[in-house]
Every structure is written in structure tokens, then in C-alpha cells.
Length: 365
Image (tube, rainbow, N blue to C red; front, side):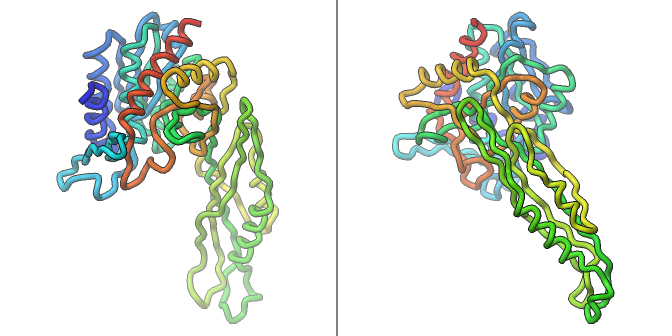
């Protein structure tokens, strides 16, 4: 077993869905043992942030990930709460199975090794609370975390070509909203005495369905936003005209304009509330995107490309704060958050080479 696969196993085996402290401690202790970096582990703040070399030079380029995970499936945890980690060899590919293998402890381990091995000053961060809306990233930004460039190690493998690790130059954000229709209750036998909130909600849903969603072009990669009504709730009884009905809207956003969801409030008695707004990411520096792509080319036999990603990541928070980002990592589409979540150990090794090369290219420029 290689050093990197052993480190990945150790990270994956450490539970981190309810409390990331232990996983953060594994990251911090390994960095202190294997590097001469300044390592800060704040389990109630950002998570783990490490810098090596001159602090100003280290802020030129950062490798960024997160060590929290979503709650495991029943088959991914033992009766005493330990995470199940299993290695399987399938069609000449050895994969590690378990919660967090793909999202994203495999790439965190690769970034740790690359951080150690890179012959350049640089920064490493493994944030907490990414799965809860970027808690650690936002805490770090508020505390002054501001690298010029960042490679965020979320999944980018098999996006354009199976088995190839691409470089994401844009990803969507997510705005989650609640639309509430207010009416006046009455007995259902005399519906004209009330105002039916379900009917008003239905009108508002038609407004949502009629809205245009923006598009964005990022370094030649086009992304389109989307809107979907995902939940609805209303009514208090089969014989009562409802006085309230609400529904949720999942909006995937792109850099630039948002869908005009405030238009739902043109319907009488309807209000709109934003519950969550995870920002999109768009790389604003073609030179940086090309430098990481060149490192991806040298790290593998395939032909990586600049691509887009449908999921929000901490790159959105960093980009919003002024850091130029790309996303590049071992996870493949369909792996994260699943009962059979897994990652290719060969691709994890590839990402370690890719990250090290990219850091050195950017730091030396």
C-alpha cells in the first residue's frame, strides 16, 4: 500500500459527518509531522490551514478541500459508529469504497502530499462544514484567508472523457427559495367566502415556469442556470379552503444575472424568501486555467479539457471574495453522497502529481 493510499484510508475511516474535529486533527497532525509548515487547526472556525515558506509568497497559490462528509448510508458505518472502508480491484482499477472517498477525502489526501512535496511556498486548507453551506470557508475568508489563486479539489474526473481528470473553470451556485401564498380560510362548501392559497400558489408556480434562466460563457465553456419547484405544502383539512400554501424553488445559478424570481410577488398574497444562496464560480484568469490544464496534461495519458460543473463548492465562496479558482479532483460524476461511494486510488495518485506540478508552475511565474 502506498503512502497516499494509506493516508486516504486513514482519512476516510475517521468519522466526520456530525463532528469534523477528529478528521481535522488527522490532517493537522500529518502536516505537522511531514512538513515544516505553519499549521493551524481551529475545529470551531475554518478547519485546517497550513502555509509553508514566506507567508506572502505562500498566498500566491492554495490547495483547498474539506474534510467533512454527509451522513453515511447504513452500510457505510458499523454498529459502534466506525466508518467502513473497503478496497476492491475492478477491471485493473483499485478503488477505495466508503463515505467521503470521493467527496472528498481522496483529493484532500492528494493535496496534503502535493503540499508537502511542492518545491515552492504555498498554502493548504481543508475546511470544515462545506456540506453545511461552506461554514469553514466563510469563517476563513472573514479571518483574512485570501490566496491569489486556488485549486479546489472537488471532482472533475470523467467529465469530458471517461477516466480523464479535467479542469473545471465554472460551476453553478444554488439559490434555494420559499414562496408562500396567503389566503383566507373558509368552509369548503362555500369556497367563495375565502381566498384559496393553493390557487394562488398555483399561479405563482406558473410564473416560475415562465421565467428565463441566464447563461454564462466562461473561457469558452457555456453554462445554463435552471429552476425547479421541488416541494409543496398547504391545507389543513379536506373540507377547509386553505389559508396558506408554500413551495420551494431550487435555482442553479451562473455567474452574472439571476432568474427574476421576485416576479412571483406580482400574484396577490404571495411572498418570496431566499433561504440559501451558494455562489457560483467562474475563473477570471485564462493564464491560470491554462497553467492547471498543462499540469493535468502532464499528469495523465488522456486529453483533459476545461469543463463546467453543476454542483456548488467552496470555490464559489473564494471566488466571491476575490480568489481566482479552478476545480480539479479525483471524484467522478455520480459517486458523491451515494451508498457505494468510491474513488480510484490511481486517480488520487494522479491528482497528487497534478497538484504539485500546478503549484510549482504558478508559484514560479
